[in-house]
Amino acid sequence: MDECKPLLVGVRKFRDMPLSECTQRGLADARFKELTAIQRGTIPHALAGRDILGAAKTGSGKTLAFIVPMLEILFRAKWGRQAGAYTRPFYSST
Image (cartoon, rainbow, N blue to C red; front, side):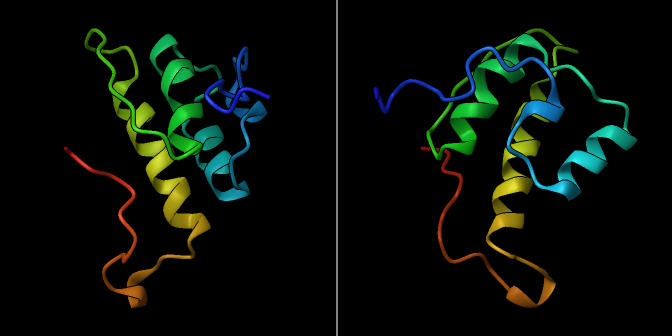
């Protein structure tokens, strides 16, 4: 299997993404159902721990494309208020 190839190619709905129940419920409560192009192109890579760089027009879903993987990674790491600073970098601006 090509490790550079995202495993979620073709996924178009948030409910089909490998996200925690908490994330799925939050997305459903906010009425997010279908991924936009920028979300389809970035979320699978971010969830796989890859660096991403994306550009898209205002209103295309960039913020959600950034925040969903970040929150999911923190949730999976069981990060919370008592955890303090997260010790393993999950985002780098370099």
